[in-house]
Length: 309
Image (cartoon, rainbow, N blue to C red; front, side, top):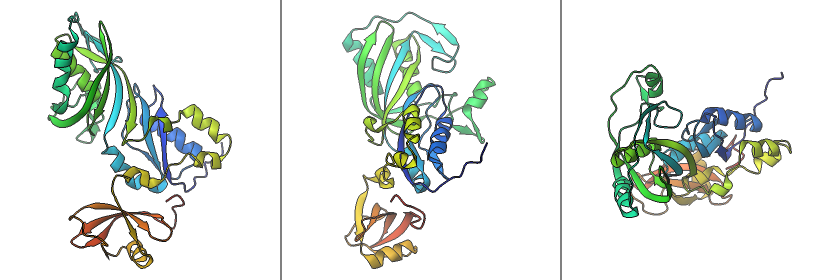
């Protein structure tokens, strides 16, 4: 088998991750299709989960943290009445209890407890690290590690549909939210237990779900050549398009790219992050940060290698 010849390719693609693959496995499949020298994903989805997984290629990896920190939206189905060892359908059933009969108002009253700022205890079956190892490694050995409560924000939680023993929910949430834990906690609040039956990430950071492609679609496009694949790259600055935009004149652009501080053209608050562009070419340069009345380099593109700015 011939060795892969990696290339410099920069941008963001939206993968509709299939069930059964880890986020890293899915990333590596797409990376090989692009022959991207550098690649990273922006927030792991469990193998059980499907949906939006933004992949950063090349220089875009410098901005992956902004997508990791972004709000996310999920569609999930919660199976009521059964607790499992993992909190999802892949675990062994621990308890099987009858599901109470609830009116719509009673159910909404319970769901309302999970809207706004709430506290969660991260599940043992998670990638959260303890002494350098993910918690799921301890869980598989039957070891329980004490976890601290953390606050997350559920900006929207909508009941999409229900059956006698399941709830389908549309959830918009902040970073670090465990949907599996929401499912389990709703089950406890109802007094019958619950686990996650399915999980689909609809969007990350406001990226539209219509922009996602499946692995099969990426593979079909790859057969048309790398130019066809590259046509599906989104610009790097789409990861930070909510930040204030500043255009720098040519002399300030050069200074910035050499790592020098430049004067801010308008007064802005201390510590604010900015998207920086060259005034003439409109090329995205990277991010700057306000320090007093100046803009300091914060995270800049390597413009000698980046073709997609």
